[in-house]
Image 1: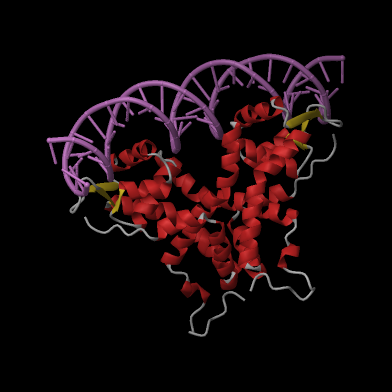
Image 2: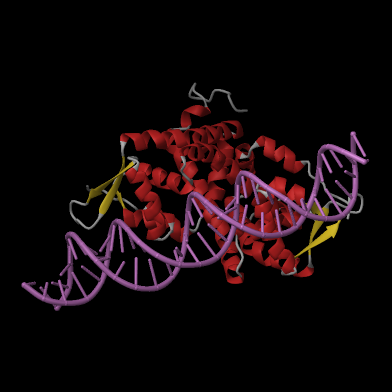
Length: 168
Length: 168
DNA sequence: CTTGGAAAGTCAACAAGGCTGACATAAAAA
DNA sequence: TTTTTATGTCAGCCTTGTTGACTTTCCAAG
């Protein structure tokens, strides 16, 4: 479907002026800002930062994930993660269970309070995305997805998709 | 087009499970990371950060913009911007001209070196987006745009779109 | 069984880039 | 003349990233 010459004898590439590309870059910037603004407000009121939100999000998505896995997903150092994770554990939002098969590993879970907090954090974000999806329509959403996928780092994504930490 | 019931008697809303919405949230996170990774590498090699890139980008897009305008776009404090802007001016990438009509204002321009640097910074990003656009196809791109626009803060965007700093 | 390496955690020190508050100067506007 | 606006600057704080060094616990290979 792409690469086929258009009616003007050119091809889809011709429509991608530098101006359009740069507008796309700005759109990503502003959209990402809008996208994080809701949780940011909730986080600030509770004395947390975006780093805490990321931990809560991924632990919610993959309960039982190990610390090492989380490190790989977030792409930060363990010292950096540890500061954030320690706070969340001390405040009772995240739980740290010793691995059953491998006792060196720690598997991460959200507590009831953590689940509640994560829900509160992502509520605005989910509402915003739901609204955007609804107003733009299903076809637009499909396109949105395709382009976003193309922008991700393929190496990174292959790694993330293959994660499957079970076991206590 | 939206809100019209589909062939199943339901409507598009039915397809938006919580799982899909949350996957969309993750897609934004990972895509944004991929999106910034190219310039980040260039910046690091030169001892700059993302904040410098943002300044170069917007000054390139709107030459002659005032400091106040840039502050409004970036949404940071002037103390924070000043640190970054000062470095760019001292290093000869940005120029600071006194306003003609209002001599209190400083209008910002990229120098030749600044234009070059900006180009180098955005090169990878533009290539990535161009590739994503091309592989996903024009229809997908239109949808991508629609959804991104819906995610931006409307207040913020109305403000940005109306900017037009002329004058020296 | 010993030993090497992996998983996790911690301390210290540093940098970028946000923030607030206080203050200074020049120029426009009232 | 006085007030307000636009800009710039100093000092100090916070979060979240970084390196480097070191410990404890435990698995696994020899």
